[in-house]
Length: 265
Image (tube, rainbow, N blue to C red; front, top):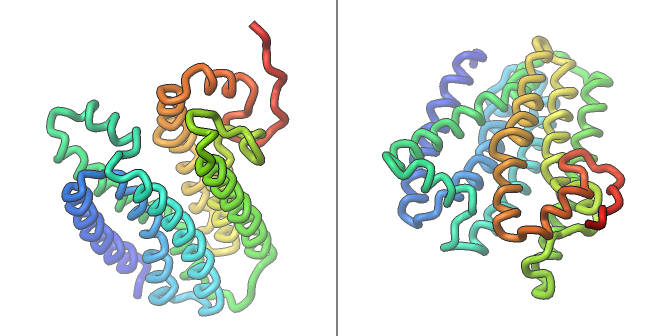
């Protein structure tokens, strides 16, 4: 199957899937379901490329396994989180209900469709890798795999530490500043971005692999400027107030770093 045919078929399929997820989210009145669908969609996309791509089967199987492992872990983590809070909706989507109060449903449907397209766009590295015919692994691909392994481990550890903190009723309303969260306010986001860096480095060994830089750059922009840190921090300030503001003054927002000493007012 040609590269263009792969892209068109995958795009059509994902747009249909996300339309179905929109109807389900409307039915349960919780639009946080889109985060779960977005995470799981990469597993489906990578499996499709791995099966239908024209590259070396070993490489196709490797990138397919890498993406599926990451996608299913992240999707399952988000599924537990959304289900655990249901029917209460994530604060980001509660805010969108207010911001989009006029024509809310059409705007939210468009948002879901944009998520489908974003999966195709961000999946560029997987497509390039799956089409690479070279019958051996390059050093860049091994380096990308190592970065991916370290990042996946870091993201899993950050999520585990946050979940353990939240499960303790004594921590209700408090700021998680233990483990990796002592060195970054969003270590999960940092390692999520690093996973995409790993995919990019892996893709560099493939023809046109430099195009894969679009994925980590886009993820970085989303995390730092759009739906990641800005919206999460707004929600944390609303729920935790001055305690979170003090945390902001002492702890790196993204890259794990040594915390500053708190200033005494």
